[in-house]
Amino acid sequence: MLSGVKETKRDKIFVICNYIYVLLAFLIVFYPLIYMISASISNPKFVGSGEMWLWPKGITFDGYKRVFENTSIWIGYGNTILYTVVGTAINLIVTLPAAYALSRKDFVGRNFFMGMFMVTMFFGGGLVPTYLLVKQLGMINSMWAIVIPSAASIWNIIVSRTFFQSSIPKELQEAAQIDGCTNMRLFVKIILPLSMPIIAVMALFYGVGNWNSYFSALIYLNDSFKYPLQLVLRQILVLQEMAAQGGGAIDASTAAAMNSKAEIAALVKYAVIIVATLPVIVIYPFLQRYFVQGVMIGSVKG
Image (cartoon, rainbow, N blue to C red):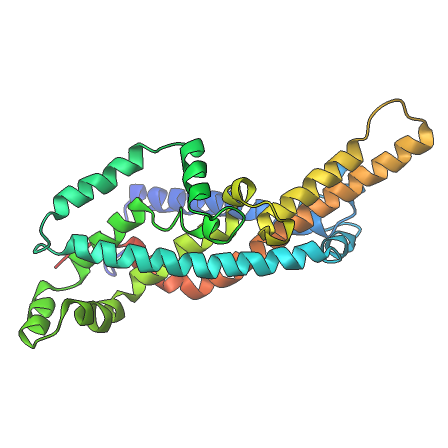
């Protein structure tokens, strides 16, 4: 509220309701994260019985030990970092020039090309034709099958185009052209340095998407040594659950062993979730400033 302005009773009630709403939203978002962290270092007996509901109980790091003793985890980490870095670089190289070109009013046919891009947001060839195309291009079981088919997001191109239209002064481009600056030099030397907010936002969007992606690897990769982290973790969870479930008639000792395996599977499951999400959580604060600027694209002009 502005200083010197007296709050009415309704204003105070509104402010209180806002605080309550924000607090509830914070708890809804924050509780699952705390629960996952606590469950990953708690005795699975307490987790399964519901005794552990917030803070760790019976602290143990066996889950993380079992996860990191698996060499495929480290191979998956390396592959995922490679796919994320290369994939995000390709995404930016494709998205930003396309968005800038579509933002230029002197680009002949820009409405036609934008319409063609929009069509692909609603209609696609499907999984089988896409797989056959990737196979004919010789990209099966290679990194390029992961990063090339998803090289650009039409929605991100639209967002980037909006940024260039609303945040880059047209007069600046005209002044550069009068001074003899070519379009390529204008884009590289002037436009990109002024576009750090949208570059950071696009890098974050694409990076998180590439980091969490596993479906393309599941479809196109045959060699387990090329699997990304998400696919490796998926295999670990499936194997742990299958080992825990077993089957057929069992005696008391076998039942006890299966119960122990089930507890280990639950412990590994939570550790795996933390391992997969931690890098993104660590990197996000460094991009938060640009992210906040990016989401405000086009909201205020003048």
